[in-house]
Length: 429
Ligand code: CAP
Ligand code: MG
Image (cartoon, rainbow, N blue to C red; front, side):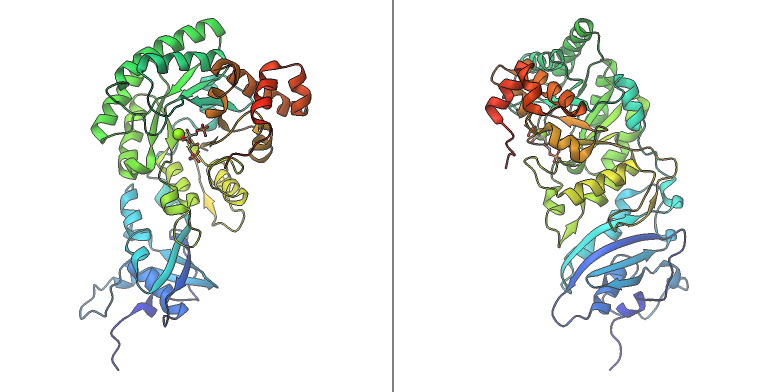
C-alpha cells in the first residue's frame, strides 16, 4: 500500500538538538491502535510543518522546517524545533505551534506540554522583567523579609471610598502592598480612576504616618487600549505597579503592556486566574511551569505560583519547580528542561490563597523568605479587623524568621493570639 501519511519522518531517535533549537517536553498517551512512535511523530508534525497526508509537492527546504521527536521515554517525548520557524518576539506564534492544534488530535488520548527550553537566539528578542526581585526590593526598601500584601475582601462589592479605607488599614497594620482582586477592574460602584485617586491619597497618608514605603497592585485588566490608558493613570498617581490577569488578557496583550509599563516605569504584578483550566489535569493541557517561563520571558516582575498548603491546588514538587524556573539564572531541577536565562532577571514568586497567620511559618518553611506573601481573608477575617489582622500576619513572619514557636510568640503578641484563637493551624480546603 502507498504511504498516505509521513508522521514517522518527524521522528529521529539519533537526532541531537542544536544550540539554536527550541526543545519541548511532552507527556502523551496514544489512542488505541496508534503506536508510540507514530504518536510522537504526529506531535512533531502537527506542531511544525506536517499535515495528515503526504503531499505531492514540498518546498526544497522542508527538512529545515520540520520538528523532530528525538527522545521517547515511556509516556514522555522530547521534540526539537528549528529556530527558523519562529518569528522573533512573537509569543502567540510560538503557542500556535507548540501549544496549538496538537491538543485536539484524535490520535492522542491525552497530551500535556510539560516544559520548554528556549535558546538564547529566541530569548534575546524579549525584555524579561524590568525590575525583578532586586528591583522590587529596592523600590519597597525591604531587604530580607517576605514582601507583604493583601487583597481587599470580599473580592468585589466595596465602593472606591471603602476600598481605599481598607487599603489604609492594611498599610497602617504594617503591610507593604494592597492588591485588587482578579475580578475587580472598573464597576459602577468602584470606578478604576476613583479607586486609584483615593488609594493614592491614603497611600500618602499611610507613608507619612508610618515612615515606610507603601504601594498598590491595582488591576488594569481589560481591552488592550483600555489597559494602556489605565497604566498611564497609575503612573500619573505615583504608583510603581500595574496588575494584570495575564491568562485572561492573553500573551499578546501582555507583550504590548510590557512595553507600555516600560514607558511608565511600572512593574507588572501577574495574576494567573484561569490557569487551572489548562494546568490542573496532570495528563492533559499546559503546565504552570511552561506558563511561568513564558511570563518571565515576556517580563512580569511578580507571578503567583501557589502556596502548597493553602486553599488552591499545586503540589510541593510543582510549586518549587516553578519557583526555581522563575528565580534561577540557569535552571535544571526535578527533571525539567535546562533553561539558560542569560541576562533575563528573576521574577518575584507570589504565594497566595488561603494563607493566615497560623500557617505563615509553614508556607515560609517551604517557600523561603524571598517571596511576596499575600494574606487576604487571613487578615480581613481577624476577629478585631484588618489592622490587627495585618499585625498578626507580621508577627507570624517575625516568629518564623526568629525561629520562635508560634504559640510562644503569641503569648506576648495579642493580635497573633487572637488570630490563632480563630484559625489555629487550619489548612483551608
Ligand atoms: C486569595 C486570592 C487570590 C488567589 C489566586 C483569591 O485570597 O485573592 O486571587 O490566591 O490564586 O481570590 O482567592 P485569600 P493563586 O488570601 O483570601 O485566599 O495565587 O494560586 O494564583
Ligand atoms: Mg483573588
